[in-house]
Image (cartoon, rainbow, N blue to C red; front, side, top):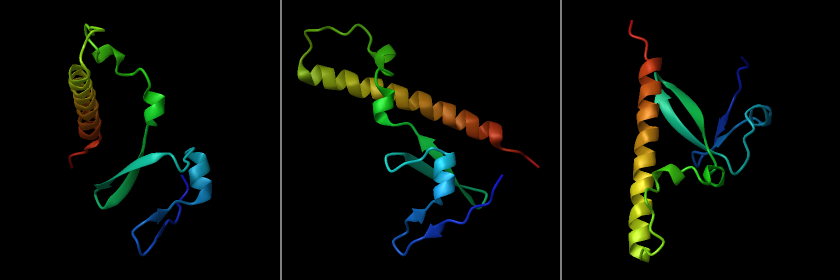
Length: 102
C-alpha cells in the first residue's frame, strides 16, 4: 500500500494525486463520499447514476400503463426510497462488520 499526500485548498477542496486517481479509475464525473473513521478520512466510490439504469425495475410492481403523471412520480419516489433504504441497511451492516471492539 502506497502513502499519498493530498492537498486541501483554501476553499476546502481536496486534490487527489494523479497516480491514485488512475489506480482507482477516478475521473471528474466520479463522486465520492467521505466519512470520519477514527480520525481518518475514507473515500468511497459512488456509482454513476447512468450506470444504475434499470436497477430499480424490480421495485416497479404492477405498473399500469394508464397512470397519471402524479401517480408515476409517486411510484418512482416510493421505489427510490425503498432502494435507498436497502442500500443504507447494507452500508450499516458493512460498517458494523468492520468495527473491532477492543
